[in-house]
Image (cartoon, rainbow, N blue to C red; front, side):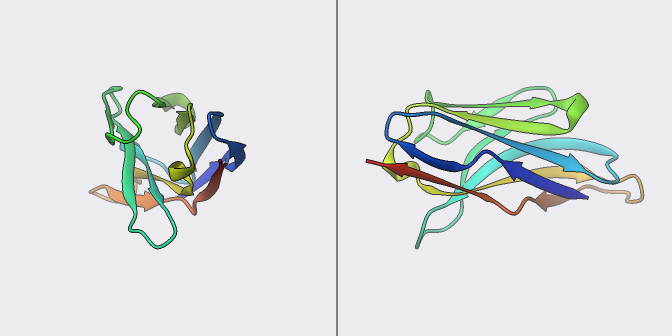
Length: 120
């Protein structure tokens, strides 16, 4: 199982980016999917999560600016980021609570991360 994130880059403050993360390989079922981020010198923190039923949860710092969504048919989760601020600069990681068909329980899988840099 692999998670691969795309869409990071350099953007000016106030701009937008859209991240995507696709799960591939031997996928049985996916429960929650989410995005986390880690800024230089800081711990990884939750950005947003979504259940397979479409319920969402956001960090206070991104509420109203970021939107998480998913395409269950494509095993893909997206993060639309609007109104970006310099403090949003971080490496963004996706994860999935996923149960491969050869396991009896789910595990948390992480993507490698994609860098988002917001200039002032």
